[in-house]
Amino acid sequence: MRKTELLIPAGSLDVLKTAVIYGADAVYIGGEAFGLRAKARNFSMKEMEEGIAFAHARGVKVYVTANILAHNRDLPGAEAYFKELGQVHPDALIISDPGIFDIARRVLPQMEIHISTQANNTNYGTYWFWHRLGAKRVVSARELSLAELRQIRENIPEDMEIESFVHGAMCISYSGRCLLSNFLAGRDANQGACTHPCRWKYSLVEETRPGEYMPVYEGERGTYIFNSRDLCMIEHIPELVEAGIDSFKVEGRMKTALYVATVARTYRKAMDDFFADPDLYRAHMEWYKEEIGKCTYREFTTGFYFGKPGADAQIYDSNTYVKNYTYLGTAEDADGRGSCRIEQKNKFSVGEALEIMKPDGRNIPAVVRGIRDEEGNAQESAPHPKQMLWVDLDADVEPWDILRKKTEA
Figure 1 (cartoon, one colour):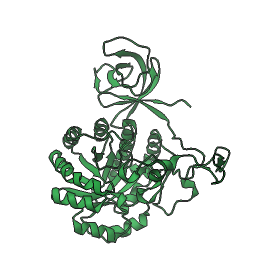
Figure 2 (cartoon, one colour):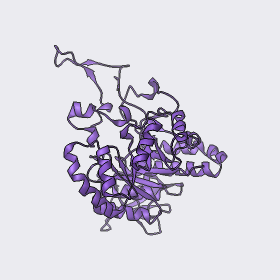
Figure 3 (cartoon, helix red, strand yellow):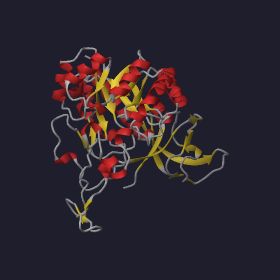
């Protein structure tokens, strides 16, 4: 049986560290150029160096995205960028554009290169093409079924790796190569600046009647005609493994530390349980489903894995997320007596019940006994995001524990 990797996204240094602590085998990140998440915080070279050192010290790999579809203006800077990347020692680069690939191979001949899903990798001939050019791994198009992935595995070299998305947002356009944002907002999704127009609510305007907006709707709440459900394959790990997938990829370089920790921890336990004993995996299924539902999501689908999605893969009446828990902060320090230091992310108050989420899978109920600022001044609530606070709890809390509270209905 091939060893399966859990690959988790990170849009910032603190989220990278969270992904590592909460169970990732590898983390993928973007630098300040050539990646497809321009609005993520992304990583400076100094942050990248720190993040890679943090991950490597814990046996976790780091892959750097350089997966834009490049224009002429992008090519001169690519060589210098890859030379810089060579100094911080990532484990692989994720690339989609053949021109960028060629530069990376020339500048960093020993660097492992993975081919992004943006390259439309839908058949084993494509895998062979990239293998002959020196790529180690190809990220499958989201449009492939498990049957197609099994056929690819059977027809490519043993040392060629398949990486496939198993969780996260689904793009309405083929393999994520979208023109909507560029056409409607002047921001190119293929250059990392997507405005997500697939989530907008649309009306119809007739050319000779400007200003008259005719609704397009399924019901009284309207319709979101491009709004896909999120992918979730937590219930289908055996099928993914049997298909020969080497890396289970989670989407979400724009997501919070809470989202990353929740998804990483849940898939980590599910994968470990399955490889230890498939019966154990089946026995814990309700826990996985309950836990994965605690992150923010847009209802769930299995995408294309079991055939072409139907109408039930779309959400027509809303573009809002399901949000069952609110992220309060991650314990950066703890005194061993129930107090921890956090950078506050959302409002909470003295007396509120919350949950301590631990990397080992435990969820500990707790009550806020007190809140103090860094000067030791007591306060009844924490209304200001990014304020550094000491939070006194009636339960044990340790560094890297995450504080979250159930969202009020």
